[in-house]
Figure 1 (spheres, rainbow, N blue to C red):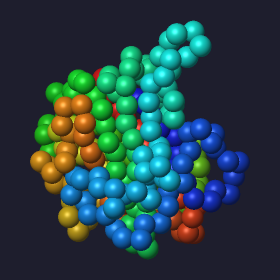
Figure 2: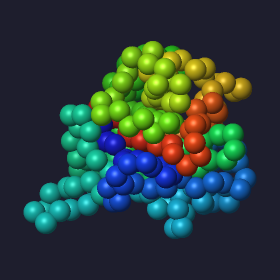
Figure 3: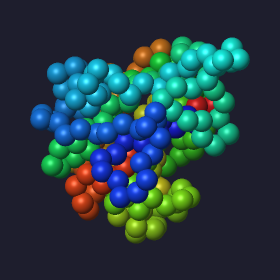
Length: 224
């Protein structure tokens, strides 16, 4: 797994690593969840440069590939180069929703485990985008994946979308996926994953921080 650090507002704890942390900004106009990451809708969500939070592969002093802007999690390995895997994350919010978009570059897409469009399958075995929401800044030292802890699922949890639109929300307590539900992505076939480039847009409707500016969003990419 590749973890892209933390998006947050104001946290009541030691500031995370600034090289792997970005701030989600309020959006004047809610972006349309249509699979298109248009500059006029998502610029503020991408920082001052418009695409500021990029997770890319660089060469370290020893000539080996290293990850910039993110962290290797679990048992993952550093991609060989940016076509092997790299991505840009956009995040913003308004009074009602949290919006996350991810633009992915991957030269080999794997989707042979969780069935297309299925719920709560083995999404970790396929290429996917995972979003972890810590809406009340409880900052647990270990990841809670039970899906039953009210202190976790009451303000967030783990949300996953795979390359073939399978989704997983069990670790978030199954709050409801799809139009009019707690969260959703752009419709299949509308700006989804396309070869080296893809976009996943998720609106999390009901998982908001109890205090404005204290939510954390951990973004990551799962790959085989």
